[in-house]
Image (cartoon, rainbow, N blue to C red; front, side):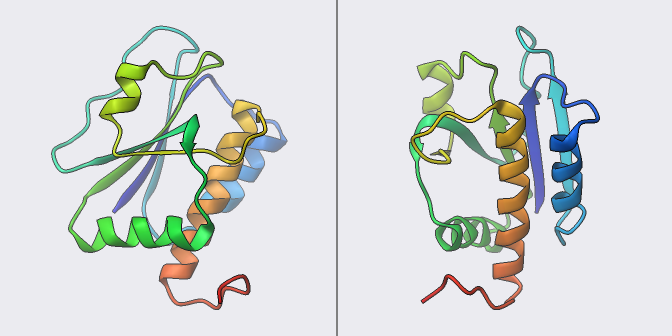
Length: 140
């Protein structure tokens, strides 16, 4: 299953970009990043059978194991792509939220969008590791 991060804004070459690259390079599944302008422009169309996860302040706060299990279910159900949407500073409209398969957040605190990318990349690596059967010290 392709793990596709679609984010508003450019990450550039700073330390956040290095973190994203470091974690995505460790993920055993195919990954892709698409950067969109900060404002305007449409999200790329979803292929049939894809799932969408929006990172949003109104989303659920999932633990790493629950996140991994959700991705594993979709993978096992034959989902070909899961798309992770990171919006601009204004976030997402309600109409966009209702179209998502899942809304998640990284807690009640506000995070810069560049950090959200790095945190997502780390969680994708962690989820793939959990699903591959690597020991996870927080489980149990």
